[in-house]
Image 1 (cartoon, helix red, strand yellow):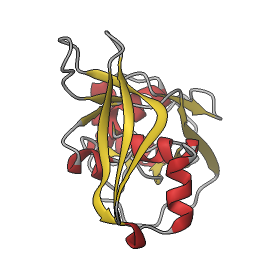
Image 2 (cartoon, one colour):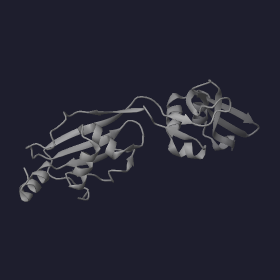
Image 3 (cartoon, rainbow, N blue to C red):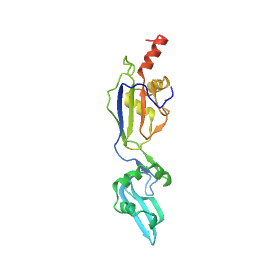
Image 4 (cartoon, rainbow, N blue to C red):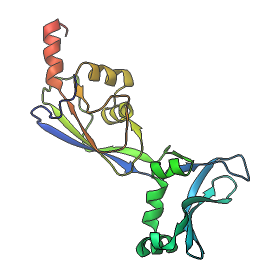
Length: 210
């Protein structure tokens, strides 16, 4: 059943939060060893040449410890960079390091990838409801992200409901779980889903199962 943009009359609501456990690894070939995994050092390097500026974010190889640079701004006119932003680079602003480390667009421009393995966990405020039980009350689940980790919807559903992947797919195909995107899609922004248990009971009665 397609997502209509408005859920049924909801009697139960739940909140799932994708909690941050750490920043993603920066995947970029190290020039000193065979490793490709790096972590941000928490520092920037700013170099001024006359009226031109270069700004790099510094990363450290997880294996050998070699420090490398990722270009943030190259040969930019000093007047083109707001003073407050320049000060944040010079002061190694932690929030700016965090934002750039997780920025997928920045990664594409700088020709590196992000590895989100081990960076998140799913926290729910609900018990594992017996979705195949007799409770017909529909459930609204609000999913919020503390970090923009791209996670497949099916993985969130299996973790949140404690079900197998085939069971989750079956519920989606039957219209019991209503999603704003495909169950195979990767999401990184907040969204809402609905679980309609009454639909399952009605279908069971009509087909004579149970």
